[in-house]
Amino acid sequence: MILDLRKNRLTGELPWYLSFFHDLRVLSVSYNNIHGVIPQYITNLTKLHVLDLSNNNFSGKIPSDLDRLVGYTINVSRDDSDIDPFDEISYYMKGSEYTSYMRPTNTILDLSSNYLDGDIPASIGNMCSLRLLNLSRNQLEGLIPTSLSNISTLEQLDLAKNKLSGEIPQELSKLCELGVFDVSFNNLCGPIPTGTQFSTFNVKSFQRNKCLYGCPLDTCIKNKIPKIEDNSSKSGNLEVGWLKRMDEKMSMLALAMGLGIGFGGVVFVFVVWEKARCWVVPPKRPQPFYGVYRFPK
Image (cartoon, rainbow, N blue to C red):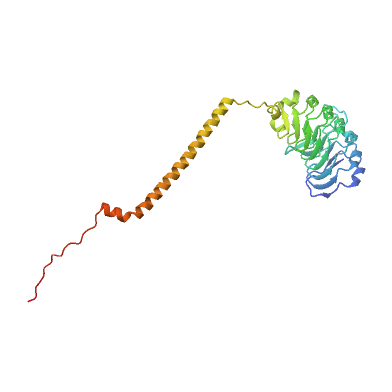
């Protein structure tokens, strides 16, 4: 039984009567406006092997007994050709849409892009046939549980954009099937696990954390040794700086003196201009009149 209600305008909380759908194998309500906590009755739907509540407004904590979902704990070989697919369903991972047949081995738990807080339950590590786990874009805190290393079938693990702290468990390097891994934008610190699939992940998988270091990131900032400056070069720099400041002061003084002398010269010319002009160009004396004078008859 499949219930696919993705990309609608559903609001409110998940209805309680879903707890009676005991044969439900796929429940997808992503890209709606459903709010409230993830109801505890979800764990009564033991045949679920696809639970997609992503891109909603769920809040509160992740149920701690998700390992009751037997559909995530069955040990079915992927090469078992006797199992017929139920149907097709699409899901989103890292902004891309994927479509696959709903076989019992195609197990998905996607709670991303909500407002979930608290710790990641260690019981998720008991979902031994889980292939895709996406808890990104929430407000989850605490440590990454080492129990996730028990999910040998895990192919995609996305914990990005939360508030997780501590180290990345070295035990996760045992996940040989892991092809997508992202813990960026958290508060993680410490060495990045080495070996197996971790050598194939790029910088984007670990960026924007508190203090992760190791391949492919640079060494942790706290572990970097500061360079010791040479005292002689430091004193030389001080001397050069002192001379530079003196040159600047002398330049300003020369500029002020030049302006003062120029202004004083202009004032002086205006004050003594008459005397200077007389000294340079003597004044003209009145010339005698030598015109013709006519006597009266």
